Image 1 (tube, rainbow, N blue to C red):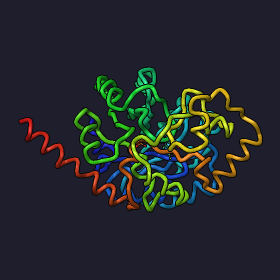
Image 2: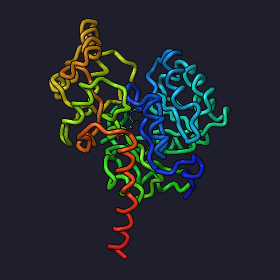
Image 3: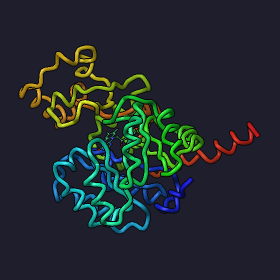
Image 4: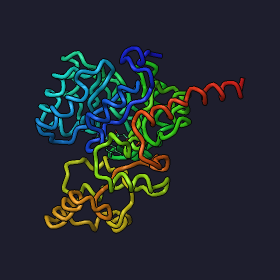
Length: 318
Ligand SMILES: Cc1cc2nc3c(=O)[nH]c(=O)nc-3n(C[C@H](O)[C@H](O)[C@H](O)COP(=O)(O)O)c2cc1C
């Protein structure tokens, strides 16, 4: 097994997932300062001002931090990656799309790379030399990704390659969840939804409150929001979000969803007004474990209970 902990220099094997719109510099700095790996999630076309404002939170940290991009957005424009590389991140994560040029650029700058995988073909791609760390992400997870495998089978598959460190993602929301993926061979957990309603998360309070009020059965995997907004997500990457009136309308009839200009404008307005009956609230099944407003440090402190759980399990089966 590799030693990702020493390679990246974290003390808690917990990364906050890069989440565009939710994980900015404030979250990354808080997670990194609490011993994990803080990640900034970058939207498809960030402004230069946004990049410098997020980087200001993390650029002077002694602890590790990184930046996550959508591969398909970097295919069109590498400049957001070039900008962030100037701040010396510890890690660049590229997911969903062709990662080749972006990974090469990160390596040229001497920065480690990771990729979220969602199926066996993704794992084959991630075995190329340009990817250093594999993030096995199951369909339980929030936000965009594949919905082809659950976290545990994908993680077990990824661990069979015995060459690159594996990080587990999707549905991890408790210390027990962290313990489970570490026991199965992951070197760390990549966690999004559990951090969504933290004090340091960006995003409207309506969205945070909706996540806190939701449970295991309240999410849906859908392309409805992307079709309505005419976004450039490839069809294999739907997103897991809280069910709402809009997603319910197309749950059984996605083909009847017409991408009109009027609908696009309605969806943009709903997002601007944080109208959660129509706008997407991306979140995974681990919404079940988000119940109150916490700081990222409090979430990390709770999740670090994985050590006791692993010890108790070892003692029970000794
Ligand atoms: C609100 C939200 C936004 C997300 N945005 C991104 C993103 O910008 N880039 C990315 O690679 N993954 C994104 N994801 C997916 C996460 O990286 C990760 O796969 C997922 O959160 C893990 O599952 P979990 O939510 O159950 O912890 C997002 C997830 C959520 C919930």
